[in-house]
Length: 177
Image 1 (tube, rainbow, N blue to C red):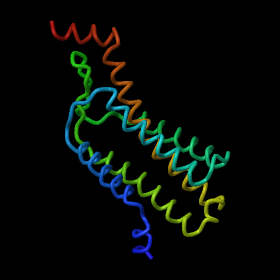
Image 2: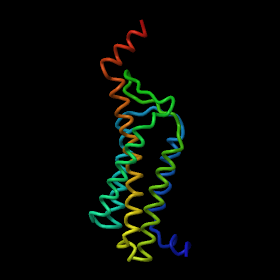
Image 3: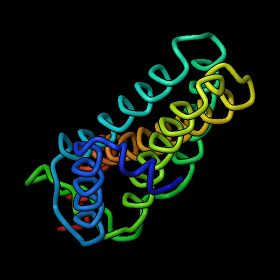
Image 4: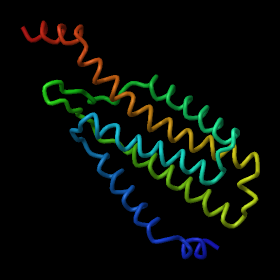
């Protein structure tokens, strides 16, 4: 059965899969990035997550509410956790120094595999897209991935604003004297 699923998978899905692996691997090493770049991938993943929900289950209140609640919970959890050690915003270059992490790869693969599983499952059993438990479970899972990505982007925005605040800048100047 797995062979049949894979053989019916369009080529572009494999290209996307390997592209996401490459993107995740790039994030496993320390790098310097702009705020725009720090927000771009999470924004795309939020859009992919929402698209996955709507494409699989329509824009029903149940699926969208499950997605939203789960996304908001994930954002709150991510925002409560500290930024990884070594993450800093360099005011003079307007870039972040970001240590390498395998978490982005895990999140990318989790979202991709969720979308792939839901697509394959609903293609084989179309009635699943109307099963309340299936819809709630996978809408919430899509939302959790979206929230994790969005929360990570918000942490970068918050870090940049903190580093640019007048209080922080005056404290940094006084430590250089």
